[in-house]
Length: 225
Image 1 (cartoon, rainbow, N blue to C red):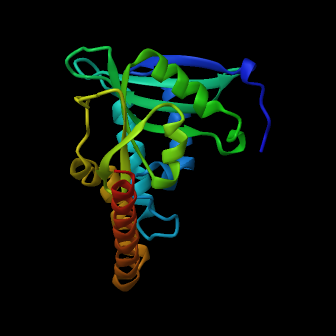
Image 2 (cartoon, rainbow, N blue to C red):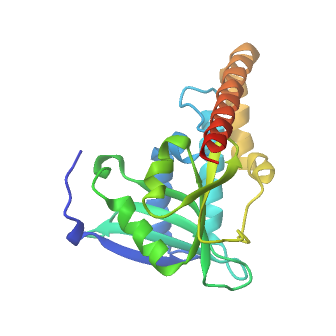
């Protein structure tokens, strides 16, 4: 792990549509962190991993290119012009500046453990009284340090609130993303490279892991309540 000086890190805020150079930096980080960023955590050895990767990149890119009336904010942390991490947020469609929903956050693997995520979170929570996000059970303590509380379960993750957000933010359709031509091309590639048995076995194992994650999240939330 590389050590960094926090005083040398620069926090910047970008409003969609985001500059192309910044967008490419973000998409590069997304590609490097597909399993961690995706809510379903597709394993890298899954036959359709390419499709999951394409769908996630497409989703983030679409958010970064959104125009009014949709409102998307990107918070980045960088040093000497090199991006080290980002947090992608959706803002209320009604124009309110009192809350936001955090969609994705990532820090370059070599720079994790240096407090870069905290820099971005402090910037966001310092400006928005109410914030919503969802995370894995293991990450709950991390967000509790910023004042978030457990609220509900969503697809194996814990929904957490700071303040009282209503989550009226732009949300893309997962169905539309998975049926986009770029994603479909990757799915067809998987069908050509892997047998039905291999794909079916991987899908069954994947579904089993997701069900276990959801059951674990429900048990966790019940214990907290």
